[in-house]
Image 1 (cartoon, rainbow over the protein chains, first blue to last red):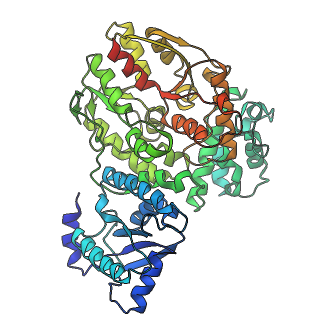
Image 2: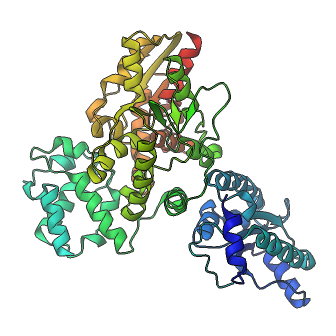
Image 3: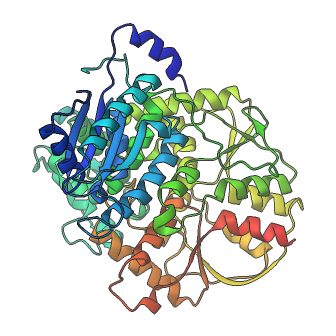
Length: 153
Length: 386
């Protein structure tokens, strides 16, 4: 991958990672809410998209987000066994494995995407994850698909 | 806009249409979709009834299988006409609704618009003899490996195809070259109208193929074969190498006595995919190959060769209930022959037929449950026994 070369060039232009996080309505989004009402700090690089279930997230959502210039994609759902729709998160887990493989084949690298389980009571975990993933993407550098390295941070 | 339609009408000979309706009578899509008729699309455009053909939603129902082109007494190029209309629709920001949410097209656009180092040869194992990037005979692997990943849990499509192809070439005494930076041939993008990305892919592939110094390029995928030998040469000028489908290569090698097969006891039937059959006119080579394998009995379906129907989806763009009906119809026809396996070369036909029986079917399950096997894999299996 040629990210190293690019990232050096762009970091000097004060590049900020642009991260899309898909959160399921019942657990992870509520977890994000809890992080908010508990006044836990996490970086503003993360943009949340609420979906009804992590099983709703199609492989295309992840790839399209990356194609359009997101630097990282997070997928958050209920813990296994806690899915509001019984097994949606199991579907998500299966799909994400496939996407990880595809990202590797395409040369984007699977480490730009991550799947995490966050329950409604895990506000702290949510904030920590957002901080940690932002730093992780910062280290990886900008998305190699992004032309010109522009970002609204 | 109107000028471009006029030009398209001239180029594809649509002006010669005598409204006889033969195209509609053979169209596999029109048989199940009353709203769709190839004739109607052309006539509407000719008479200017539809001011903006781009809003013609029926043009996405066309399977571009070219059965109408072959039937037309005045040789109207319907598929070319549809291709032109689609390119204009795409330009105006009206792409079709694609299956898989457009995942496969996105993958292809990613290849077109970036110079990422792909893991294109992930399927390569040590027992396969290949050279990288340079060689006299080149194997264009196509997207079978990627499709195998996308459809792994859905329809059991095997990633084995490129491996099988190399095994066949090796057995014939050829060490093929494979391209590390090969990109998608762009077939799907061309047929959904995204010409910009298609040309990017085309330029990259032509550059790589020319740099490889290959004298012969072998394809397993009928779509790559069509796109590179027809569309690339139409748009980008003549290519300095011979192109061959793997079935033609094997048929030739068998004649020359370079390939020997073992015995497989099996009754099979063969589905001529539209790209290999009607588009490239390769009908006999696959049948010769089957004849060369001992114990294989080929039972033809009622509609075969240039009358073969379509697998129901084109360029991952129009997967709908009409396509499903066509798949079930074709599978019933295949099952009726009494064959144990349905063979085809096209990875898409395979995915679509498998998908049709993956879920609930509207008919008795026993009428359609015929396993679909890749022809290239079958040839490789027969080699192993020999």
